[in-house]
Each structure stands twice: as structure tokens, then as C-alpha cells.
Length: 228
Length: 228
Image 1: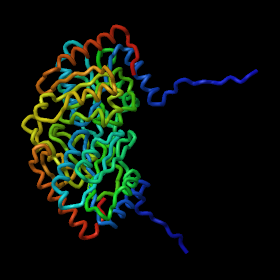
Image 2 (image 1 turned 135 degrees about the horizontal axis):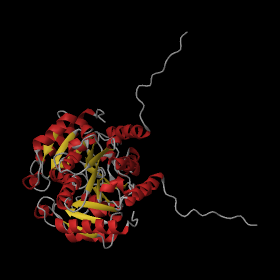
Image 3 (image 1 turned 135 degrees about the vertical axis):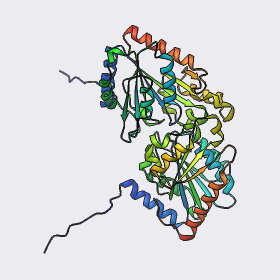
Image 4 (image 1 turned 180 degrees about the horizontal axis):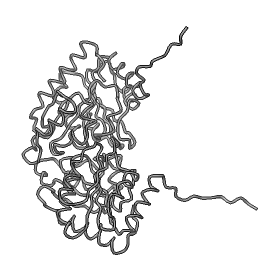
């Protein structure tokens, strides 16, 4: 009788196992969750505030704010708008992880939520390898950062489900070749859905907000297929 | 006879031991070295190109370019100006370290250099804990990133020797409270020397360039006291 060879097809690391648990918990409550990634100052908090403003009458929202330091600047801004917010202080760590996100979840009444927005730490490198259990990764690029970022930080562009190009109101004052930028993105993540907008002027926000609302409603309807 | 108690006052980790070696090597050749830190798109490469333009007739320069991906965009720009440049590809790592810098040093004829400029990976968190052996850490903040960055990324503000506020030509078009920003910096790093400037228009560059030239000349004169 020959020996059987065991083939283990996919081994999740500890973080990703917890991410799966987090996602199951969100889906049991029909909550759609997004993870917002960007470099420092690209406009994560501004986008969240604009999104809250547009959707708070239509969807029940909550926000998780990731920060490397014990400051509640962003969480306070969200709370001031009447939206439940929890701040995660990473204690200097350069990214959120599934353990931190798991600790934040019990702070919310999930049964009373439709959409949870997670603001990751400002960093284009480290968050890439740490799934949280959210359904979609959203990357914000910012016009004044320049058009070469897809070429220099390919990892994060490869791993996202939608791209926002913020601060387009500054395009007349900075050097930003949109074709060069888009070619870089297309090479890494073909067909990536992209929303050029300005959180400052409001231009382009509607397309983003409507896409997010539609994604949330689709997820609430079908009970949630797992994306990432 | 009583037992002697050994007190080891400062244990350097492996990275910092190598950083000390790197600095000794630079000083043996009377080379002054700076480590440029910033978030992605704050203007590290632009500042380096402007600095080269201003100083290449007066000092013998070299540049080390840190990137997370195997792209030589920045190193090519430096080389095109006739300045020796070496690119370090971190292979996805979020910061340079003393080992990588040590591997770059033999690529230069150190005896023929006065000033070496190192461009770290675009990241406000991870590079903080990895000394390279350079003499000064220079942080670039960027006006469109917003005025709250010292409060959100205190670690990097604490550990630097000079601060550049780039893209001041965009101040009329963005929300940036200079007093609030400066209070945050002062709390973390009292008396930190600061250069507001615009690499795009050239405004404010002279003060930075003259400070850097003076620091380099002082170091070349005294053989180099160790800072960090």
C-alpha cells in the first residue's frame, strides 16, 4: 500500500485567517466595508468626510480611523458629524492589521450598519500585505504627489479595487501628465476603475459616491461574496 | 573579593553598528552625507535636482536613490546632470538600512566627493528606526499634504536635523495653517531649523542651499564629528 501525499493547497497566515473571520462577521451583519489606502496627506480623511456628507441620509455608516500616534484628530472630525467612529492607535506601526481591526469591530453595533469605512495609516508600502477583512481596497493618489507613483510604488497599485485621483483642482499648478500616470496604472492593474475628483471643490465626487452606494447596496442584497 | 558588575551602557543593534562603520568610512574620506526623508511625492527628487543645480560647481556631489521597485527614474535624472548616482532597490522594503547603504558606498570614489545625498524610500514611518551612517536627517513636508502631519507622524519629526516645507507656491490653493503646523513641529523638535521653499519656482531655495554648503564645508574642515 503506497503512502498518501498530503497536499495543502492554501495556507493562510495568522493575519489572513483573522481577516477571513472579520469578513464573515461583517457579512453576517450585511455590512459592506472598504479599506482606504494612501500616502500621508493625499486626502483620506477629506474623502471620508465628503462621503459621509453625501451618504449619511441614505446608508448607515461607521468609520475606523488608523493612526500611528495617539491623536484623535480624524476620529473627532467624523464623530462631530454624528457618525460612530473608532480610532486605532498602531503605536508607531506602519499599517493596520486584522488583529487591530478585529479589536475595533465590537465597538460598533454591526446590525445597525450598512457601510464601514476604514482609514488605514498613511503609507504606500506596508499596508499592502495586511488584509483586514474589508471587501474592497480603495487607493487615493493625489495630483501634487506627481504622475510617477504607479511606477515607484507598484505593489499598492496592483492590490487595489478602485483608484481615486484627488486634488484635481491643483492640476493647473503642478506637473502631472495624466496619460503617463494612467499608463502606469493600466500596466499594473488593467481596467482599474478610477475616479478623478477634488474633495476641496467637490468636482467628480458624485461618480465616486454613486459607485460606492451601488457596491454597498449590491453587497447588502446578495449577502456578500468574498473579494479579499 | 566582591564580584564586579558589568554595566553595558549602550548596545547598538546590528543595523546601527553598520551605520557607525558607514559613517567612519565617509569621514575617513571627508565626505558629508545627508539622508532625505519624506512621504511619497513631497519632492525629494525635485529638491535633490535643485540642490545639484545650485552646488555642482562648488562641491563634488554624489546621490544614492532608494526605491522599492527596480525603476531607475530618479537615478537617471541625477545621472543626466553628470552627477554619480547609485540606485538601491529595496525589493519592496519600506526603508533603506545600513546594509543597503554599505553596499552602495563602494560604487563611488569617496576620496573624490564632498557631499553625498541619500534619497530614502517615500515613507513617514519606517525609515525612522534605521540609521544609515549619514550625518544629518532632512525631512521634507509638503504644503498640499496638510498642516496636521507633525501631529500624526510625530516619530519622524522628532528624529530629524532640518525640515523643508516644499511646494509653498501651492499655499494659496490649499488649506494649510502655518502656525498650527509650526506649533506641532516645535512641540516635537524645539528649535528645528526650517526652510520653506518651492522647488518649482525656486523661491526659498537659496537659504537651504547655503545652509547645506556651510554644513558640508564645516564637516570637511573638522574631519567630521558624529551626529547620528
